[in-house]
Image (cartoon, rainbow, N blue to C red; front, side, top):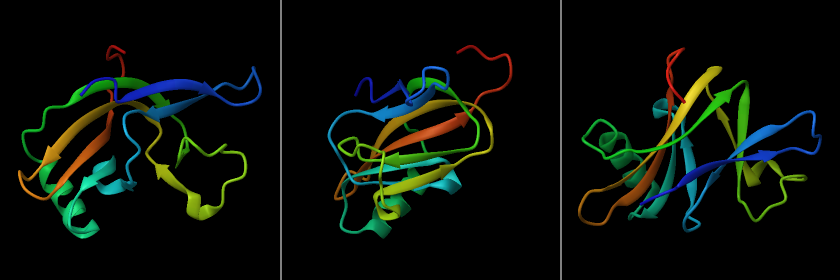
Length: 133
């Protein structure tokens, strides 16, 4: 696993540059879990419920986290499929991610129960003022 996440400049006006977080690798169904501040990508599982439950359990365990980019979060973000233009999305084609304003680092970890459940977690961890990045 390497380079799962990256930041790119987005936005039409050169004076108002916004950053977009890009999730690389294969296209997987994804959801945002606000209680653990993670994007969850579904690799395989018998149901959504078992996948989400396993993710919440895994995050408390000994996952190997890959460090990703740092970013400043101001208000809210929207997640949508990279194949979409992003200019005219319907509500069911995007997810809104809400975090408290501040500086975050993105981290990624794969998890599995060793059987029929596996996923990828992309967590947003707050960064203390003065921390590197």
